[in-house]
Image (cartoon, rainbow, N blue to C red):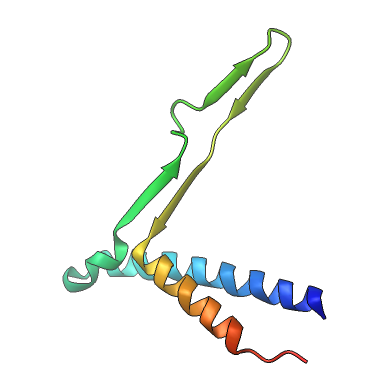
Length: 88
């Protein structure tokens, strides 16, 4: 039962992320909804990732994540819908 709830939460979160990205993409072209497409990225810059050179092996670490206003709203809606589901 716990596994089913966890998988449902992951599904709702991924659905919120994907739908939010699609919504931001569509709203970017509409002048009065363009604020939904405002996004910011956090993480290491993809052009200059963290490199650990040990002479024998070279490790490169990089991480970048971008999130828009529409994604924040749809993730919040997804969590709300998840809390409303009754799985017995």
